[in-house]
Image (cartoon, rainbow, N blue to C red; front, side, top):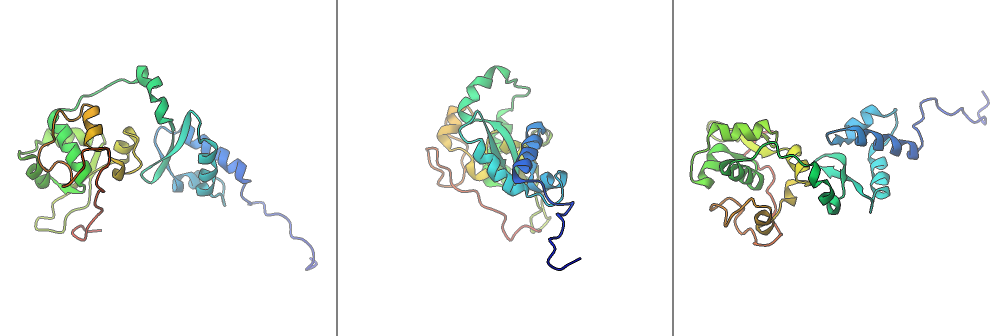
Length: 217
């Protein structure tokens, strides 16, 4: 072949970005759970850029009745927050948490990763196995990394399912005391130490610390 001749287009060239955007939209729409970029690209043809397609898709859904939202390290199509009232008749409460479970969940969410002993120290009472099991069964809490301390106790952290249920991108978006009371999750003040020290009384929440050097990889 002559060096000046234009080589034929590769048979494995990635689809146009508009088509990649449609593919991402189809997967997110059909999926009941948030989908990661890696999983999106695993389903799409070779050479596709799911991350870039998501950027275009999010922009296209701005101001619409549904939005493309990030949930932890994955993505999903969800109803716009200001239209949530339209779905209230479709909401079915399948299980009501006990006060002990609510307090335990709040401690884990605001202090994660934390051990069972730390939860009991904050609450001031022991935590029953049934309370932890209920949160694990609901997939709102999961086991985290073990602490590199004597006994190497296991820790607990909230899950992407917990974040998705409450419309949070990450644990840093957890509500403040005012929002918790408005939702009926706090009657008065939480037990001492439930929320991070210095947590404000308004909608602003102190940042959640990340993993420390006390935890193994």
